[in-house]
Length: 109
Image 1 (tube, rainbow, N blue to C red):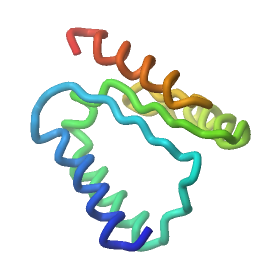
Image 2: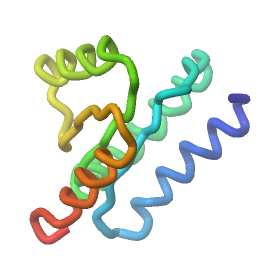
Image 3: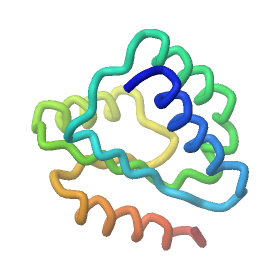
Image 4: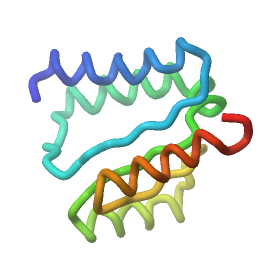
């Protein structure tokens, strides 16, 4: 993914908080490629800028991956550095969608 497309995708996620409504994110990482250092820096900058509203509004992140290794790494990272929102990995998009829908129904979301 080139820088322009990556930045556009990150900005689209940031725009979700402007609605001031609870939301969930589903990342389908089954064919994802590793972001470049420039892309990671841009995403980190946006995440830092959006940190407070993200804590209030993001009700969960579902990661769809075919890799048990990636799933295990995410689980381990969350044990050490828990995210301020629920995160879970799935092997199918339909399972991720069902979980994400349930997350929106919690706590008045």
